[in-house]
Each structure stands twice: as structure tokens, then as C-alpha cells.
Length: 322
Image (cartoon, rainbow, N blue to C red; front, top):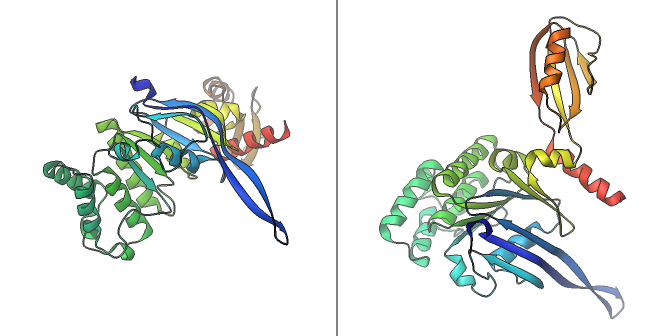
């Protein structure tokens, strides 16, 4: 298995059979295609964002990658292992964090869940202590180890869940909404920890989230899924281009002036000496900056990236029309 295909899906499908009541003593049976012929590979050590609206098939894909669900068709391998056939073997090589579910023991102190993982995964004592100390330090869990899980805040529990998923040195980490409900400080701690983990240990990370700042700060590659199909796979910058996103040039002038006029730009807002200019996301800002600096009394200037959520929404809308 080459490192470039550490995770590999080939025409993977998942179909659920749903029954619903249509009348007195009558039920209708229909099939729902949650994942529709998806193919992609993830290289060892990559951090990849996997995003899409509710019901798009993200969580179903993750569950197939962990062996919780069996594909209806297609071929799937993680580290050379078929998850549905060798789930126990794979469990020692992966870590999973579901943001809306916990793997921790609700009524026991946090440390007891870690002790259970120590025994369950048969982690060597020295390695367990080293990994635990590292997670406790970086995720700031020291004061929480003796606190029952049910008494932890959502942010504290989430950090506890991430630590639990990493004690056995997984090669792959699946994160499903890992920052859901967290405050700004907790999100920053989690993101910083994940960056360091990936840099130091080359842990492969597949991240699903509705918080697009997670993707922007952690992932250089993003995949977009819609109605079970992969509609985009590439760099973050390319996503903006695919959705015809716009970047914004925020210009501060020495004094209030009429709207700036430069090619390929349109003024979208003016407030005193400050003006906001929109231009295509795929276009370089350098020539625009040069033109403005040459023709106007420029004090300061900044470039704002397009809102990814709006870009994705536009992609969905265009697909629906076509």
C-alpha cells in the first residue's frame, strides 16, 4: 500500500432501506442512497477537510471508514485494511471523535476513561504515560482528571474525548464536528493541538465540520460532498474559484473620495475614507493594489478572503439549477 493511498475509496456506495406508513396497515419501502459512488484517496500525513450540508453523507462515510457501517458497493481500504471485515484490527490504528457523542464514562472521573483505554488497547505503560502527559499538558486537562465526566463543560469534555482518541498512537484520526459548541478559546486550543500532532507525528486527519474556520486553519485540501456525491476535491483556493467566490480589498484613503475606479473591481461599500472593493477570488490582488496606490492617496490596505460557506452554498444552488 503506497503512502499516497493510505485511505482509499473506489466507487463506494451506501444505500439504506427505509419504510414509511402510507395508509392504514400499509407501508411503503424505498431506498435512500446516502453515499453515491464516491472515490478518493488520502495520503499518509494529510489533513483533509470533508464538508457538506446536513444529510450530505459525511457521517455515513466516516462510519464506513471506521467499520461501523458496511458499504453497499465499492471498495474501501484504510492502511491496507478493509474496515468492515477487520474492524478490531483497524481499531488499534485509528482514533475517532464524534462531537455530539462521547466515548468517555459519564459517571466516572476523566482519568478512569483513560485507564480503561490503557488496558483496552494494551498500550505499553511508558507509552501510555508519555501520551497522557502530553495530551494533559497541551489540552490543559490537569485540573479535570478527577472530575466526573458529567460535570465537565462541553468544551472540557471535547478536549477529553480528543485525548482519549490519541492515547494509543492512532495513525488516522477521524474528527466529526470536533469543535461543536466550543468557545473561541477552546477552539483555538483544539486547533493548535491538532496542528502540532500532525506536524510532529504525521497523523492523518479527516475532518468533518460546519465550522469553516476549522478547515481554513487546519486543512490545505478540502472535499465537498452533496447528496452523497463528491462535488469538489482540491485546494481551498480552488474551492473559491469553483464557486466563483470574490475576495475583498479594504482600502483606507487619506480622505473621503468618490468610489474608486480600477479595472476588474467593483465598489460594494463606502464609509468615509474607507472603501470595500470586490474582485474575483482567482485573480491576483497585486496589480489592483498597484493601480490604487498609483492613483489614490492610500493610507492602508488589506485583503479579505471570501466566506467559504457562501461559496459552497452557491455551488449547491448552481448544481440544483443545472
